[in-house]
Amino acid sequence: MKNTYSEPKLFPTDRNINIKKSWFVAFRFTDPNTGDRKQFQFRGDISYHKSK
Image 1 (tube, rainbow, N blue to C red):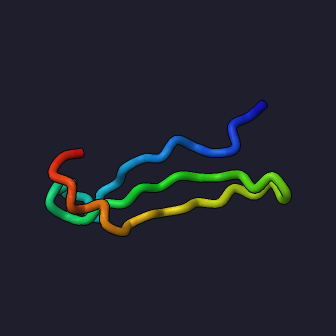
Image 2: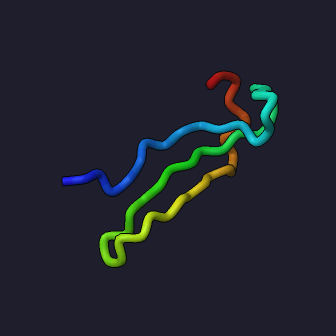
Image 3: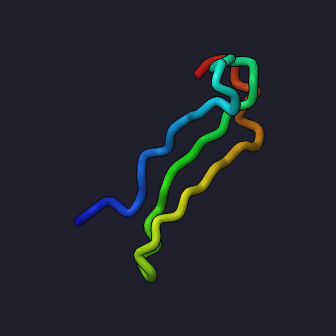
């Protein structure tokens, strides 16, 4: 059976990859009812960590 989701990944909001800037977590999920792949991003309260 094929995975219905991708592994979550951590991305910087700017291309300079500055650890002090904002980051977000993104992943994709396949809706079992429609078969459509949807992307989700979570940005809230993850930038206060000191390391990746």
